[in-house]
Length: 300
Image (cartoon, rainbow, N blue to C red):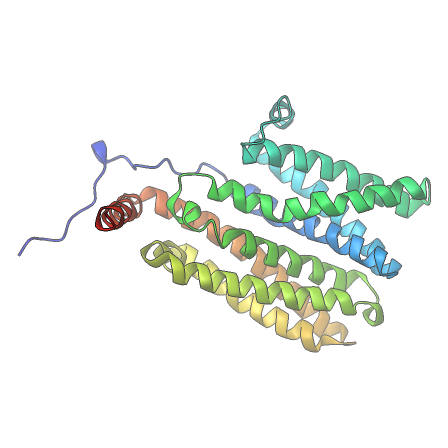
């Protein structure tokens, strides 16, 4: 019998370059950016529906998440001027370029909106900035998924259909969790609904992604990435169920928010680790390529 093929690359080097992003900088930025974006969308919805207390809390979350996320991104880049260099041009075909400009615009809008909400100065300008941040916020909640999927890393690129829903659901759950903690419980019903909905979307998207990826789901199921993704699912589902029944219980609200937040962080760390594993092993690049070639040739 012919022995099973051993996948090796030229001179023992990986076919795809491994991501060089660092921990905890990059995955924490992915979490905070999504949190800020989803909180901005929540702030707009709350303001338009007359839930002013929830809107203000969401504005503060959006501003805090965006500012902290920018700090982690600068730490990842090493020097602040590197972020400024990314703003020298705008290239619509580059997710990194679009994302840099989106982050800059989102940070400015959330800063203006939060400052106006706290001080009461220029309320019309503050409201306009808050409404505009809903647009940039929707982009912030999903663009990092596009950024990952646009690379050649197999576990990320092949998951391009589900990653935006995974990250958007996680961001929505995270924003709802933070809003539950910072809004009086009798006014936090929409925040709890956002947490439950986001947790459900994240869980469903993750399950669909692993089912569709076939062999490329292995990096998400094994090793450190597998442990992180399993922890993420358990924490997210548990946090979503607690949010659904928390009601006026301060303890259950706190436990729900903690579980959802921990689950969202595990998702980001797990996805990053799965990408590294898939880039390091040549089989995750070679086998899908052969399968696609075989399918094309068989269809002729």
